[in-house]
Length: 335
View 1 (cartoon, rainbow, N blue to C red):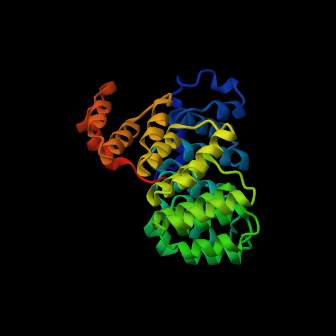
View 2: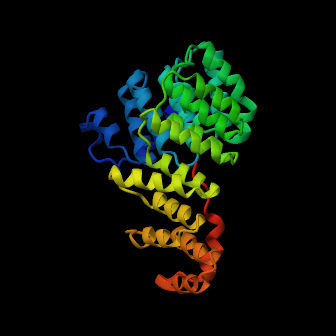
View 3: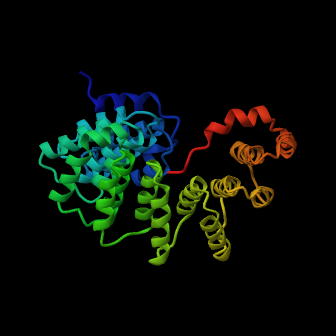
């Protein structure tokens, strides 16, 4: 079987035009300037030619770059990894992160299991990287057991690991488990609160989402744009105009620059509460609008019985009513 090293060396000898003057550049600069897998293969071959592939720094860089640059799989990264006799924890974590990024969570779990079999201990980066790629099925199958591993290795109080656990349990619909982690946290940042509020939105417990937001603000934690979108979505479902207006005032008072998703959430909240004049005001002040913006404002007028205005708005800017209706189902509550 042809080794990875010999393949890379062959590639280098036949493809040397993409990175000019390779031999005159320090390897560190090559890594920093690498923008594609084609370039990385050449750099890899150069490290083999120079006899420095065994250096941990070089191994880390090649694994990290191949994990980040491969668009839809981890084939090259895995082949490089398999030729490293003693991968560092950084390399293991990078591989796990890569599998999460390429939506291969089961491969990430397998990599974690292999890490343990070879007597490498995870660190506080391992579990957030691992949980980030989880689908609902993987979270349900592996989540609780991996939570035990978190505790076993002493990361139960690490805020990044806690945030990853809350998000993982919320994703799998185990909101009570997520809340257990949330309530036991000694330190919570906006990410922690957002993950928990998102979990309640997922199971349509919008009243609890609203309560959590008020607790968050009451404890002096600064909400983010994600927080506002989440709570506005809850207000929309609850038709809670008072809280929705308070959120809008909070945004204005702190001169928070609204983004497109946040403005769409404001339009939706006001429309759901029957305040079409306020919904239209937000809509008209937007710098940019997408299909969801048009869909929400048109649907709002139609649902409030103002079909004439609905038809007039839908004909503006090339967005026909039929098109808006077609896309109306694409609006999903933020997570």
